[in-house]
Image 1 (tube, helix red, strand yellow):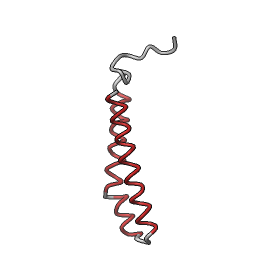
Image 2: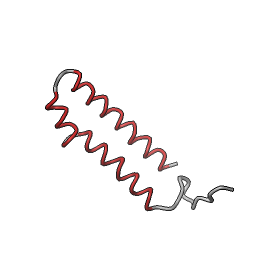
Image 3: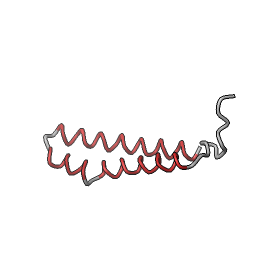
Image 4: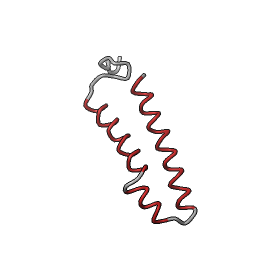
Length: 72
């Protein structure tokens, strides 16, 4: 459950950041949008998701904290 909440929270944060990026582009603020993607909040959100994925791939435990049983 903790992993699911972490992923959902990170996805929600990414959604908010993508909306901010959309608003910058819509207003014609291309330089601010580039900065937002390369050095700002969107980059941080992407790194957050990336670290969650990386950790989950190195940890063989399932979402409930047990080793997955595979197909039964």
